[in-house]
Amino acid sequence: MKVVAMGQRVVVLDTNVLLHDPEAPSNFGSDRIVVPIQVIEEIDRFKRDPSEKGRNARRVARLLDGLRERGNLADGVPLNTDGSATLEVAFCRAETLAKLPPELQGGGGDNNILAVALESIQSMGLGEPPEVVLITKDTNLRIKADAVGLKAEDYTSDKVAIDDLFPGARSVKVNPALINQLHQNGQLDISDLPSDDVRSLQPNEGVTLVNAERPDHTFLARQNGASGQLKPLQWLQRSHLGRMKPRNREQSFALDLLLDPTVELVTLVGKAGTGKTLLAIAAGLHQVADEHQYARLLVTRPPISLGKEIGFLPGSLEEKLAPWMQPIVDNLDFLTGDAVKNNQSEDRRRHGGGPKSSWADLRGMGLLEVEAINYIRGRSIPHQFMVVDEAQNLTPHEVKTIVTRVGEGTKIVFTGDPYQIDNPYVDAESNGLTWLAERLKGQTIVGHMTLKRGERSNLAELAANML
Image 1 (cartoon, helix red, strand yellow):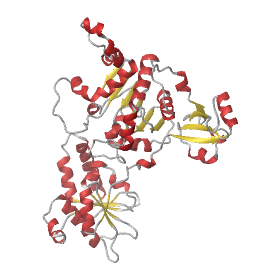
Image 2 (spheres, rainbow, N blue to C red; image 1 turned 180 degrees about the horizontal axis):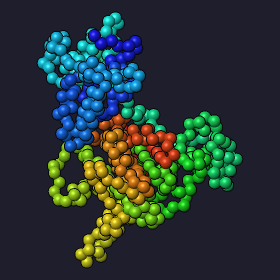
Image 3 (cartoon, one colour; image 1 turned 90 degrees about the vertical axis):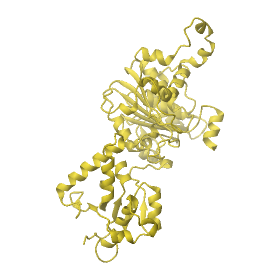
Image 4 (tube, rainbow, N blue to C red; image 1 turned 30 degrees about the vertical axis):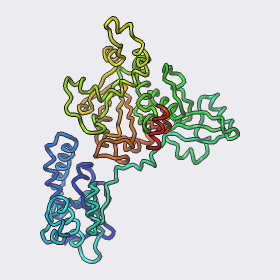
């Protein structure tokens, strides 16, 4: 009979947890991990899947196979050096399954997993029954577990509370002398700020210095990740972006991050219409075409549709990608003025030339590349300004895969709205965009900005706030 140490929980893992995060067993401290045999069978069925699920299934199988070297999985093997955490593979006994309500006695994956969890309460030693928790991302299974008296929880080790997401900027009331000092010297030691703000200020965080005597007087600055000092938005001030001008403080901070070559990764989070994609495209195009900071602008986004699929798209890869990349084309048209010029180009149409396409021109000059995110694995991407749009539809594993493709001299920008997710396997708290922003917070070469104010139109702002 297996014995559970005092205070040790028994954690039963569902298949979807392991497919979501193959490293999940190592994220429960000193708990005793139980993997039902039904989970192993389901993992085996997924191993040939070409998607991320298949890759994770193969990863899980290799990890469990490696644990066999430490002992018999049926008896439990140690997960850490001191042996406080263990993992075992458990079977469902017929007599335990028979104790389930009649509606759940037909067998099947979920019911067998419930039976293993119920059996764990009775088989883990004498005395007080241990705390047994079923960890699953399946909401229906959590409801079933609650109905039979089992404690069930979602897998939350990679979740980020969206309301607690790092905003990327703050306001600080200061003596007007400090604002004058920053304006004259071009920098300010952060130790001169109020102590609470100094302790919590993050690298590359935007700071609005508010004159304590005249609150309507403000000065925008950013903590420099390398030096740790406050500096004015120098990159924004020295760049000429044409018709692209920031319309609020958050956009100013975001553009300064996007234009600073020492910030190698930027995450932009915000509701629809806040200008995330437009800012990223504008900054990237400026640094590629005007400043020659990067070799080309690389744009990619996950091909996940809003509603039902319309079927396979005909044509070449470029033609198949065209509908997914149309939002990027719209932003390029706005930046280059094509949306206006095309409506007034009757002379060109008369001569058979058709409307001029900034998209086609930039691609023809080698300044713009469109990459299907499905085929990015295995690539190395040096000296490029890379924009990953609609990143809220990516899983943490997919985001990690993309970031690890970045080569020397490349800057990568992730944009997205966590409240507009079309991927059924992630939500506002478990998507790759918010996960990335939280996990890399505090790194000197990483910047983040949460954009709050919509600038697309009054109607778009009204819909984003009230619908």
